[in-house]
Image (cartoon, rainbow, N blue to C red; front, top):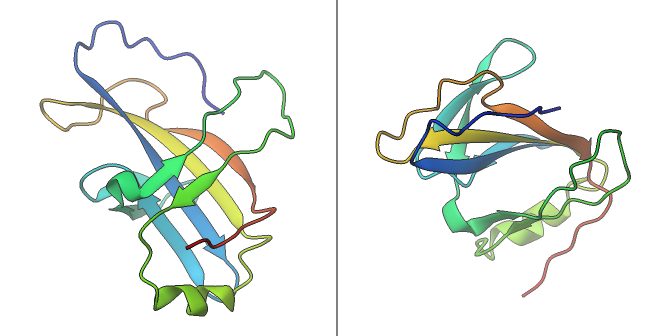
Length: 134
């Protein structure tokens, strides 16, 4: 996934996350906690726009391990429109594919830092469980 990045020469850094969720019979959702839409070129060579969700999107911390593990990653969405929830309950979210990328930006220019491996694929997996709460 991602390796070591040398960020020592950058005084103003913003770390952001980008989530791609492929829900069968619904489609692909691309969202981020960055404050503006941002395009990322994915493995198929195509560029896709990730929609800004700001603080509505939260992702748990990652364990930095050298080998694949069964560590859970939690993705949370808040303030979802109540009208949207019944529709989502009809889709097969469990078993959906998920990818999480991390990117570093300069906070003063909002430009992506020009370093190798930025943005980087941080996590790939399958949704094992999900829930809705009020």
